[in-house]
Image: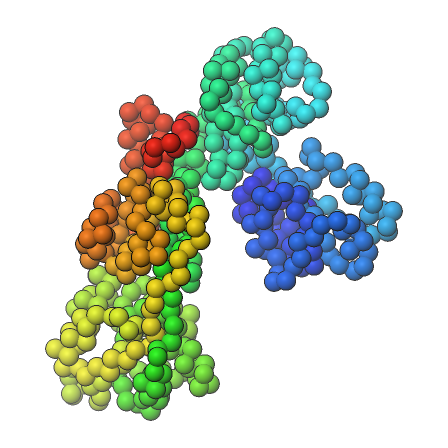
Amino acid sequence: MGAGPGDPNLLTLRAAELLGKADAVVLDDEQFGPLLKYCREGVEVAEGDYVQRAKAGQLVVRLCAGDPMLFSSIDDEVAACVAAEVDFEIVPGVPPATAVLTYAGIPAATAVPEFRVVDAAQEQDWTSHAATRGTLVIYNGITEAVAIGKALIAGGKPDTTPVAVSSGGTTTEQYTVVSSLGRLQADLKHAGFTEPALIVVGEAVGQRDRLSWFETKPLFGWRVLVPRTKEQSRSLSEQLTAYGAVPEEVPTISVEPPRTPQQMDRAIKGLVTGRYEWVAFTSANAVKAVREKFEEYGLDARAFAGLKVAAVGEATSQALVEFGVKPDLLPSGEQSSEGLVAEWPPYDSMLDPINRVLLPRADISTDTLVAGLTELGWECDDVTAYRTVRAAPPPAPIREAIKGGGFDAVLFTSSSTVRNLVGIAGKPHNVTVIAVIGPQTAKTAEEFGLRVDVMSDKPSASALAAALAEFGAKQRQAAVAAGDSPRKPSQNRRGARRRAK
């Protein structure tokens, strides 16, 4: 099975389908590890005689780089399957020869309808390749790149012919240098390229400035720390990935049941028996806590019939919708307790038969919502639905990266994430971009001696990620306008490896 060029999202539908059914997977390279996310739980990562596994009735998948029929000999495996009378299937994969060029913004065969792919590991007639009118793509040639360039010039190729060298193709480690045949030695001297890499020769390389879309993403290659619980960080991490970042989720809090569950038990009973007119949810964790109690009592979303439901923001609203409950009230402006109170209707004895509001919340929530609702004439049952406690410290390499400038940015989505991250891992390095969700979180960060670089215009994780992307885009634009190569924040720390993008 072809594993594709590196980006796990470029796996074919057929490949994903078979991985989901596989009993065992053979990895040709450790870089294919992320593809195991397509496998069912309990799949075995196999070694040794996998043909015998297949003969014994297992479905075995062997992952090969790129396309298994392109510069990847599978003759021995096929012969072994035939000899053992084992059925086999060869699943094509997206080859680096086209994918890496596309991710680098180089059109393979548009201006001139000729496209030649060669393997430098095999003996080549560079004179004949020098006659190529279109694009020449060279595999396995990085160690001999300068010699190959000289051979192509000797074969008649002008020394001004554009050349691009790209490694880590289609991943956030993609790194491309544009040069010419005559300047290869000087331009590659300090580049530090390693295989897998591609050398692309031809006029199509000149289109890169116009068509580059991947390496120019606003946060391309940025290592971004997301200090939230895994459930909370999933959509945020997906958004950061779309901006080209590499998010790393480090939980700073752990959500646990309340120490005394009786209060929550009475609240759920009151919710079912009609004690409340409203239920107000201030977090997705509160929704989760109520949902788990419902499941414990054999209830479902139908228990909310006749109740009005409020949500403090989009994430909480989404958690309710997934539960089967559509909120009746959601702030149209600021997504906070203040924003919710601003739009909450006052109690009216003529319209509201009951004046009670159930407020399931964390043990450390503020009293803003209770005070605001009380002023509007409502009576609140403020119930501890869950506790938030500081998470265990992350592994040593993560702590070292936080304090040593290994992260390019960190997103703080609340004051507690600031306090907890510093408490379990230490203060982020001063080259790390600090992005906060609002003024209160900014104040807490500054109290801990952190410089706030980015603040979202509204208190949502999505808006915070967008604000960081805007910051990254401006940094990139400023570097390009000054004639410099864009650099990640982590590259500005002392001793960081310098190389141009």
